[in-house]
Image 1 (cartoon, one colour):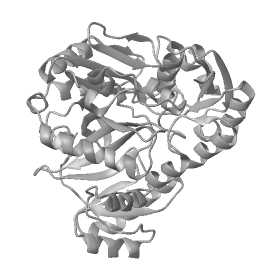
Image 2 (image 1 turned 60 degrees about the horizontal axis):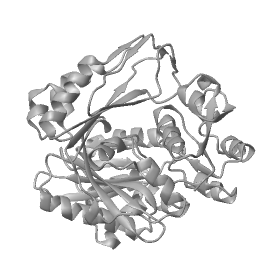
Image 3 (image 1 turned 180 degrees about the vertical axis):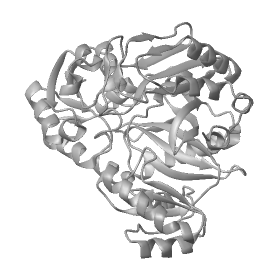
Length: 439
């Protein structure tokens, strides 16, 4: 096992990794920007080192500074968390060249699955169903028009190297294509420094279902069930559940097998997520693979009883999985919601809920600053109940108990979603927010 892990991230995921390492007796190094000198991850780690100014490009996205810090502090492994450099193939490669283990998949796998067009072609060869779409990536408006005509309207335009809902536009007809393509491409260049796009058929109001997989370096691959991430605004996930209330058991087994097949097709190792869209006829399509730990991993932990961060560390250290697919048992129902800040400022009062089956993942504390430079998520609220009805009531009560003062948040919106009769009745699809919460 590793002696010292550097966490190349900030916020609640950095805190989460630090706690897992501490429980395993592994030393930790936090990196922080000048804006995060008093951040919780900076204070909790065994050691901390400043890597630059507040802007991400000068700190958390600066590979040279992070790797120099890791070498200087004597780290033998780097955990990237999610976001920032977590799916950067070059960073994973440089970690290996510097003699440190990147806690995630091989750099070549990240590169292959990070390019959505290449990932799509890989899945086709592996026999995994994909959304109908163009066979090649596009860079020009002319190429986009030709691809859209071939696929058939409506279409979805996506950044080939994108993620997190950025660089995506839905286009209903040829008249909308130019504006949709150029806007998506500009967003892709700004967010991912790449103008490569691809076009696929738009699946109207599907359910967004993803499978958590674990794969060791000895060829063993298993899945830990699915998460339903259908409640989204502008392709940004707001709420996640495990298991899905909409997937029949036979379909769950079939999709789980396809998720494992997808991982094996690329020689995947460590934790990852295979994402699907499921239409109204329960036809499912692969859309992408996230080659990192997900924001919503706690709901899987709740229903399986497994610590996914510790699993990542064990796998990265070369250990084999110590359980089989048949031994994975799901228990109860878990729900997670994300509480985001709408503004920067000082958090003057934070009172989090507690009780059986309630978990809060956060890096916030009373008096801390919410900087304007990074992701707006303040905390994740996760609940676990015997079934969906109990979990739903539990998260309603927990949200009613949660107090956040000093910065404006989406707390009230989340409460309104969970108390909406359509959501309570379930199931919902990706059109739920647009239909009922358009304003």
